[in-house]
Image (cartoon, rainbow, N blue to C red; front, side):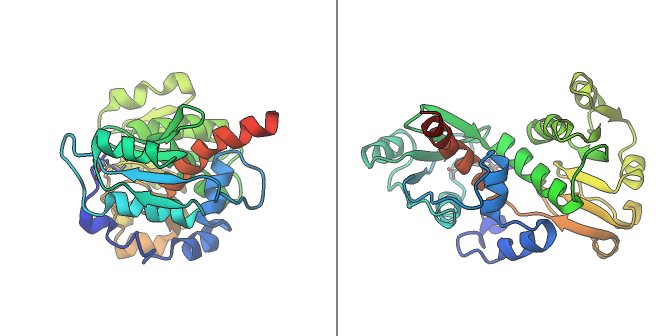
Length: 273
Ligand code: PYL
């Protein structure tokens, strides 16, 4: 998982990239719509105002990323969740969130970013959220994936989840990783490992790029749809010309999916009651 930097997420608090407009064009859904679909909430819309969210900065490991907690709180606010950033980090921040009655606590150290539902004592992690969100984006942009060939680039936590999720959507999944053994480890989940990523890219028009891999445009097939959570994110002019759609954001889709999925633990329990 590549660590974000302040300059990559600077525009998230004010929604500078206007992600909803971009996603509506390519997938027909807003961020919230993608998140609800990813969390298995059938409703067209949902009022999340009963879920109070708190983003807790965490100083462990490589420390706080400037603007990270503020970006997370802006994302949950855009979902309709009343959101705050705690004034203190770490355990004191978690205590502050708990005392304030937060229902969803968002916090990340270097290896794990979670949305913890305090009512259900369950969490959703960002790797799953990102993989699910970007798989839903690819499926919607492609008009369905049943029986279609999809190439997943990167067999890390996001790519590995994406392989399982895309297989669940009926896709025929190939996977490439700079460490071939990591791609091979996904064979039990029905994936076909590829040794030559450039050849695999040129032979596929549905890609999920979950690696810090900058794909040279000249190997991309015309009409390709790339669902691209990986950072750093860059497609050259040739790549942008050949692609039918390139779906990317640095943080929002994965964070929105995990927050909604975490709230859905409560929603689904109450539906069963
Ligand atoms: C969750 C992001 C998505 C991509 N890479 C992941 C990353 O950068 N993880 C580290 C996040 C550290 C946050 C820091 C803070 O500001 O609270 N501990």
